[in-house]
Length: 519
Image (cartoon, rainbow, N blue to C red; front, side, top):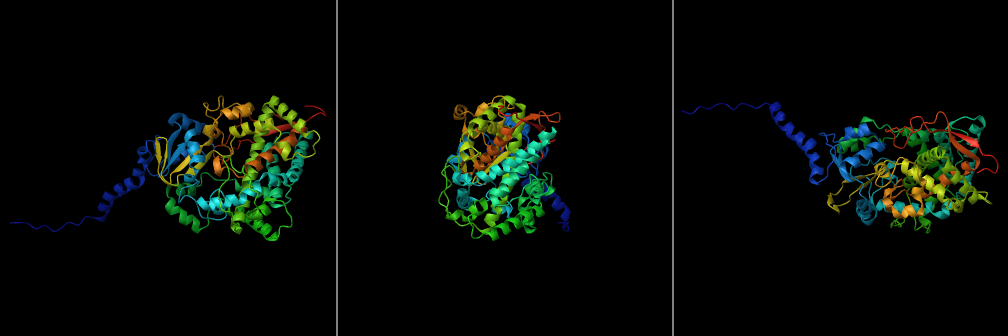
């Protein structure tokens, strides 16, 4: 006799309990096998968050963390941003392939789905993709040609004279000053005048809105939980953030610059013979004087097209922000290094005085006749690179030496780690300008020094920044000896949660007037 038992219903909660571990494994654990399958080692990731806990601990700008990663895991290793695998590559042969030889496969900076389509950032050159990037880059490039820079000489010198006056005010009182405050005001004035034809004069008015909003633009909150949610759940967070037009920069900052630039653009449709970057960008598609030295490896091949209004405004915004912060920081750190190394300062000053004999302006030809000053700046940029990392994305599956990189994989180049690699740079913590003599440069791999990136997607404003640095430094060093004071931090303590190299207590220095005829 068979007994029939009624079916026992299985509670839904039991089913969920059985399914959830499987789903958790598939979503949060299984992706952590990707790097192992590529034969790449690295720090052990946690489910779901990957190595973000290490990233939070290390911060954005941390020389020691990058040096440790390279020393521990080698020239190729991997980490996880949430569930997304990231390759960290410092191998020079691979970098040559990424930046130049196979650049067409590594054109973009961010993987699909990891860039927000929010204006103005989405139209900035740094975020554009593929042919769109090539077209905008080739159109904007003439604005940074040598011929255009020569036309900026008088404006740069005028701003540098105000900078010298500010140094003089502190020198008369024998007081120390926050160097970045002075150099930041100088670069603000230069960019406002040469970029947009605006007389801001932030050096005499530190509360000018341009100064206030420029500083606020870089008050980036690295610990903002939305950033980490975006890293962990990009497919979920991207449409939400775009819906609310959220771009991790304070809205009043973007509104201020966007409104100012739109007004400037609207007032000058005809140009009226202006010589500044805003007008040059508006007219760039008519120019045919693209300089063949636009990049380290040659021209970017793109089809010149007129820029849209959003393109002009977004890239003018980018020019202002990038030109203000990075150049001001590099100038402040160079003065710090020269204050600590008086023999280098004396040699730079002697060179400047020889070049400037019989000249009134520190012009384009003059700054290219100051190799030792260039060496001091280059060594400072090695020690305090404006960017901690560089990034590229594999547009297709690529084989580099023993490594096969899957399509859409993010590659991070650890600039700080490379710049402090003792194999590349013996005694990397020392300021040694002679590393950048012509002979030393020729012996060294070109990808060992990357403050401006490398290849066709290097920093488009590199030559503008170097000219601005040299004009400002030359003017100051001809009038003053820069020295340390009792409140100067030696060594500097760099804040790891800032985007750019930022000393905890600023760079406090003093200026002493030079006696007439002194070296």
